[in-house]
Image (tube, rainbow, N blue to C red; front, side, top):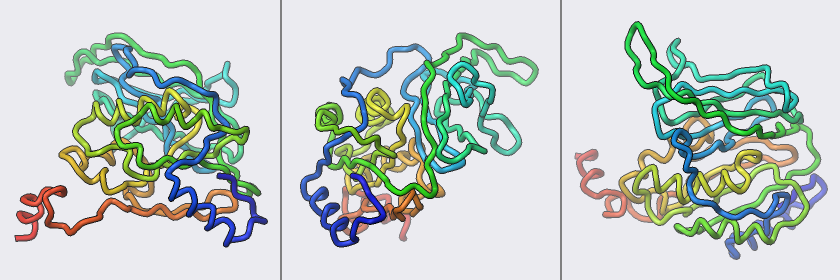
Length: 282
């Protein structure tokens, strides 16, 4: 969807309503791609994929199969990645982990940047010695930071994919020529959450293959994302606003409100883990 400051509010709301009814928006601005099987690299498990894009920062995420020390190399040209970013928690550089979320800070608005991810396997981690194994270095990818005063905004919406990751690639055949600022996952990407491999196979790897290395996406939780034993861990794989499923932000001419639509039944029903809820309320 493309938004222009001159578009009337009624016309915009009508267009959004039609998209919700259809459950599909023709995508544009991306090359047609085939959904591949999960990456078979022994180190890389999924990604990279972009999250939480702002004029001055963006988060790069990826998963590894083995505990690693990971970082991002980035810069303003593809042949000069002269800046490095890693995550620091409580004064310690994050390491010996598999789930990476590294924020690139102090960026300039409306500017193209190039980046690659690096993960060094840690074979042994003792107080006086760290033994490294192989290193995974990704290809170089590019992204552009949002322009705060942009006159237009373009995005596409997926919803109710329900465990059919091939649908992402099929729907992209309806693309046009407009480059998308982000992709919006409007709930129910899965039937219910089971484990990390499901998140990788049904969401992260298909989207990384198609566009998420260069274009960020936003996940709005639907009622099916709150079901299943792994639903309590989904927020470890996506970045929104302050680790919540509901938030708002300004992007060009639009002020966007992301709603948490994850509950469609009373708290005590079995799909939300009836026994767990009763234990917490007693």
